[in-house]
Amino acid sequence: MTGADPANPGGNSNDVWAGGSGSASGGDWVITNGQWTITPDATDLSYTILACFSYTTAPSDGAVLLSLDNGTHKVEVQSDGSNTGLKIVGASTATFSDLDLNLSDSASVPIILRLTLAEGGAVKCYRYEIEEDDDANTDYISMTGASGSSRGVKWGNTSGNVKWSAIYYSKFGAFNPKELIPSAFAQDTQVRMGLSVVEHIKSSTKPYLKTQVDDSNIVYAYDISPDNTRTMQPPSIHVYLDNISSPSFEALGGTSVEQRYDVRIFVTTKGTNYENAYMLGLNILGEVFDELYTTTGLSGNTDTIEGYSCELDTRLDNDEIICTHELIISYRRRIKMTRR
Image (tube, rainbow, N blue to C red):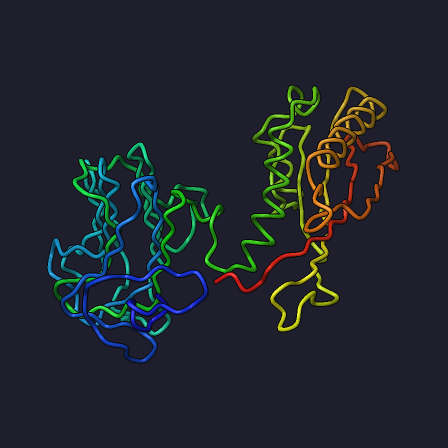
């Protein structure tokens, strides 16, 4: 639902919402009294809903804004009657506060709220699409859902005046912000390409990767500044995706594109002397290459490895004790960019 009629969401693969009321205004679907519902199939038991909304008038305390029910467990996001707070209600109740739901500040934007319910009843609710704040504190609510009654995914409001700018719903799992991104481009590049390489390396059964490198030290290289890498105990592996390009479209109208990208992998080690650090890093780097070469890029029609290059570190300073080798693997993929 992108601000137009939920009963006619458009796109090429969108489900239709049922019931409810409201009207389109200024790019939003505005509701004063109504809820929209989808009933998932019996085999679909884990859900994610992402809502972008703001208040003109706050709904009354306890008014349900979002609801997920898989038949055995249920969770709701409720108004607390103010413009600054929301309640997440499952087997227990937790709150978000200090929000600006009516956009009273000139710099405020509509909140993005993600609510998930897993098959076993685990609930998570994220605000602003982040998992940690700037101080590395967890910034989402986690709880167990209350007892469910009947399968259903709902959004809307029975009081107040709420501008619903966008609703994204998935019946295929309880996805955190790093697993399912609203932007199809970001999903293809960051999750299906970048973060999937991290997971491939973590799940490897090769001896060095399995026993010598802790999973917590195999990360995507959001921050490879010295201050950050210094907090990790070597050996560590940083994965970084760059040079994304599409030299030519594979179909008229751009429905399919040929996407090329380089995955950079940095392996950092420390040893009793530099030779030991060098060889440890080379063994780890070799296993990374073997793992990715044999488990990724295997589909000649849609996904292939085109080449690789490697830069092996050497000691240039008497005080140098850290060794960092770099591996670059080039991929080419054919993907559809019109999934919306």
